[in-house]
Image 1 (cartoon, rainbow, N blue to C red):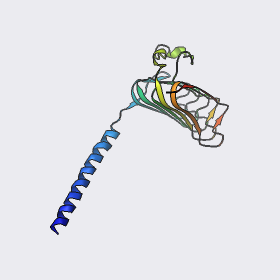
Image 2: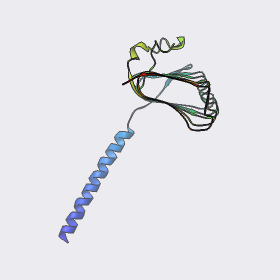
Image 3: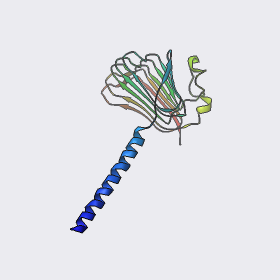
Image 4: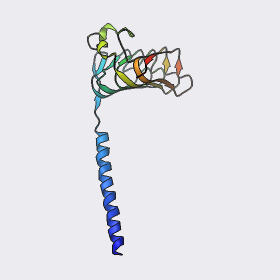
Length: 189
């Protein structure tokens, strides 16, 4: 009986220790840096951390999104009708993820992953805020465009250049993607 009490105490102390370690690890996981894009006029930039931006109906139409190679991830949610219509995304972040959810939410959207000046003509509006030449050698893990609803992307363009492990456009609904160009010129990382 004395052995049973010691055994139960040992098991309980191990469970408490495991729970404390789990809580510490959980807090560390939750403490990752989420960075909002800095937007001025129609240009939104993110220089570091895990960049997140949510666009609702018409909010980000014709906007430019730029994520530097110092950013861990670049995540853009296009939620709502025409929310990111004719927007352009230039990213050299390690992970790029654009989610299109809503009727025509990503019509004419252009996504350039691993952008380099030889592969992409950078618009004049970005020439002073984004130097692609210095970032063209960046290795990128993932570039995803997820089209989640019907008729969400028409006339779009996704281009992957440089050293990228995965370059993927996913359609999760019937007629999600129409008349869209997918260019992939990647090097083995």
